[in-house]
Length: 225
Length: 311
Image (cartoon, rainbow over all chains, first blue to last red; front, side):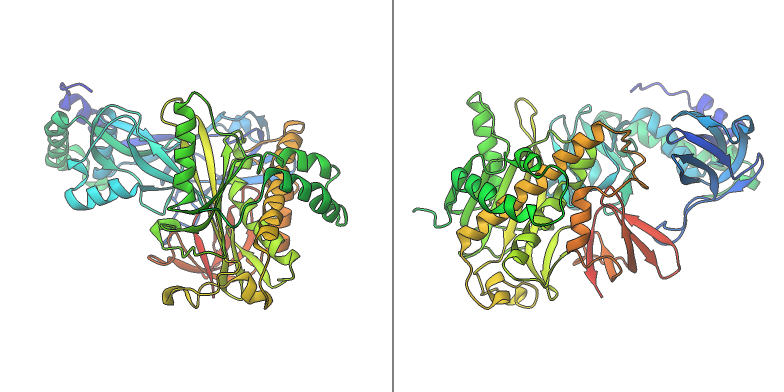
């Protein structure tokens, strides 16, 4: 992590294009049938338990087994590879792109993710802090807690099988927590963001700067906290 | 002090071939029952019996560490039993009452499983326990997702699986903990309406050693099923990412036979005692063991972890 951050360059990027471009790829091999066109608006999952699926994006059929893939994020379809309609595609083939308007919190998180060490979820499962870590967080807060490689920090729970997860990144404090105990986290998604304790002032500077510049940064029509 | 419940690997082997295999052959079975038993026969290859200890899971971890420090490694399938546990607990540090008369222990398994088998591993315990208690006549025993064994709404057997990575060489093990109320009929006030013993259910005492052999033999079978299905998967166009639409895994098929969860109206929660989340109707179970439920607004929800309470 570097101490030198070109705030003007980063904020300028968000100013000129305050969107995230989410590429949606084929989950596995199969024949593709699109459910959206360029310019369509799509919604992310909703409901109290995020149980109402997002907008349908495409259906992929393998061995007479169709699977409907829905949007995990809201936005506008900025491109669709219509030439693949009805075609057989390989797993990982890019199919379409969603242009997602960023909120202030997402801009901050986006910048922080570039400067924090992100500890990813090893499997799609539910996660919770180990009892010791949880009690220390409750007592003193996450930012007062230093974790180092080898520490048992998180428990992964899948089908009533609890697996301790040992921290493997650089020594530091837990700055960001990206999971909610009891909610499923997809494989590879960050669980926590860690930074060296002496870098905390820099992180705070980022947050303060984005908050201060937010109104200038984003056009009024896009304003959303 | 000598342990009371003290099965041996030899007695388990004898039970497997003289009782378990003939029993299995009487029912419709997959094509290779002998092969399935051989696959699972690591269960109980080593059995440690103790009169008393804190927790068998802790003992298992220490056993693995001690062997690693001595330049060796724990035999996969090692079973640790204790007549009574002093510091037993369930998930989320819930208390578990483990006096003499019950079956308390854990199985150490090296993590040699592929993702599908690893995910279904916790089901083996509930299925094995339910099969063993039904063999003794408790036909009103059912498995509640994931693997609780219940009789008339009261828990007879509880199970949890913890994974463990050794400190020096990073070897991975699964510790399969089991607690089954057999002849222990007295429960603390807080558990009186929630727990039940097998002897109470049957109306007579149960031979604990015989039950232990039966349970371990059924664990052998169900772990064997996981290995057998892995072999089938390796010879087919298997895709962990796209299991739906494929034929039922043999373990899931048996789980469905023994469970009364499907079709039930339930309360779901990740930790249901502390934080119940929502009510729903169970509509199915996926090939990866996840439960499918329909909420009152008509939407479907899939959960890979958590707890159910029947309504």
